[in-house]
Length: 619
Image 1: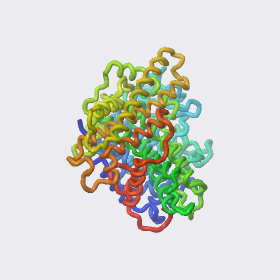
Image 2 (image 1 turned 60 degrees about the vertical axis):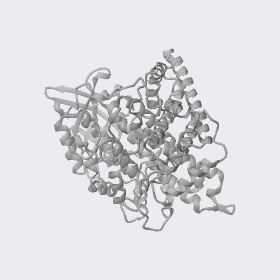
Image 3 (image 1 turned 45 degrees about the horizontal axis):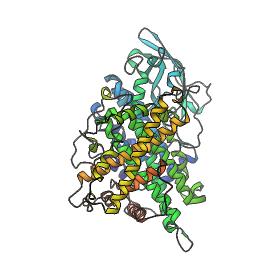
Image 4 (image 1 turned 90 degrees about the vertical axis):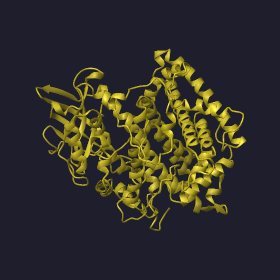
């Protein structure tokens, strides 16, 4: 069992390199991001800065000559860049999305070609969806016709990213019938530099593009206004047989493997946006006075801040476990990635809307003098739920797995060996990580070792005395919460088996509702494993924490963090009523949140330092 360590070194270096996000002179500033957004312009300066810093090497796995050691490292980079500008983060993230099929199943020549393009500052596009078929990849109308050693691609790819300046695209085409009739091809496209007049800015029937293809006009969007979202029209685009990524007919399998990885990275985008929105709202609540006191003193405001903070803590826990599973327990990834993809963008978007209530009219302001980063983040984050499978697709994939998961639990089958390593604090030394191995990946799973964390937690809590570091009251509440969550999971299992007995229920609202509720129970298991892993690694005095850790370490050590997360998840799953009045634990969480803000740390339990503030301006 291996994990990446230190997984955050590259992300910390990028954060320091981009420096103060409030300095309008810097490419990584909110001011620049907002200016590009108002003009619906691609954030070329920020992307160029990140590329010159060396991000290309972190899009290329170490096994293929780059520096990317694991999925968690890519997740942290996504979070750091997304907290400044989701448009830039998604553009560069789309490079990894389009490259992953090549890293997983491509030839040595294809890998070398993609690496050269990335190192030159180029962009890739993942050309999957189509205007008439959307996410139904099997129904896609783009065809590949073989002629000796070449294939001729015909069709249209639509609503795909980076089309305005992509130097290559990973394209799906139908080369046969049924699910085994889809093939991925890596095709080179003459690139247009980001920010230049691209063929995509011209009418669709204009000349330009290249032999066998042209770029469709950029699509105007509500969020991600500067993204190069558009399409490619293929009219006999010729590719060689060696341009097929993997076996002919294996495209759907490779895409599903790719999505297992990228769905977790999408969660990093959402968490980065939520961090910025929470930071903006907290700064306002601390300084704005109302009714003879700061707004933060109002209980409804404090509740929204604590709930958003808790959603962040749950999200990073769920995502970290999925990132590490990609290397150490890839058989669990079909489930973990779907749960992370649904729950984290969904809760982040909901939390941002809730924080908007605190800001009031300010959450809608676009006045440049007001540094309206919240308004842009709100629009941009809402789009993350659509990437790599929209909500119906993700919940449908989860619904299909619920009955087998229930049967496995009834048989006592989940294998939990080594699970604490997926959620353990980062070790001190660099132990490396197991390379991504597509041969160990699966397209579905019939057991959930993550949700089994609730059973392990219950066993720890059921002793006659509270575990070290827990007060009697905290121990009692955790026992109650764990019991109710386990009972809810058993009830959900029974419902899932009953629904599975009726094939007509497979795609009903009831099945999707069960899948959505399941993600909260799965996340509760992840939180249990994280607390158990921290407990195993804790020093002799559990309340002390290692020297120099962030303010959240104490909350994690005394069980407050776990209680907070389980309360929140139980409420969201309908197991508990809406949160009552603030209590001592909520007050402690709010103190921790303020402390992280004052010390300029990411809202996290990782002690991640943010770039120092060097300018005055709106917080």
